[in-house]
Length: 144
Image (cartoon, rainbow, N blue to C red; front, side, top):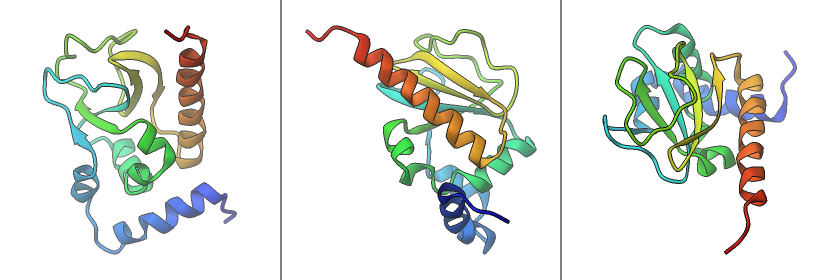
């Protein structure tokens, strides 16, 4: 198996999970949003549901390293059950229909999304594109 730098780091960081760290511990590393809470600044919201095998794969492959990465520090992860109501201050283009759906928010406004989990390498590449899009929008705004 050929590893890229990111997939190697992801596999290395996931090793404790394979040694007995449960998905519950991975969930403890991210913030849970209450029904009315909307994250400030950049945030990655993961819409998930119990029993979702793709959510479990993301929790295994990415969750242990996410908060330790530049991307995770730039856009902290928040988790929401896909069946919970969308908070009033969260402005999404459309409600999520599939799990997992990852929505990049900036001050509650959707910047973009990743629907589904296409594997770690694709996830990181797609997330990098969303973060560039958010940065580009910020760079285009006039400074006051």
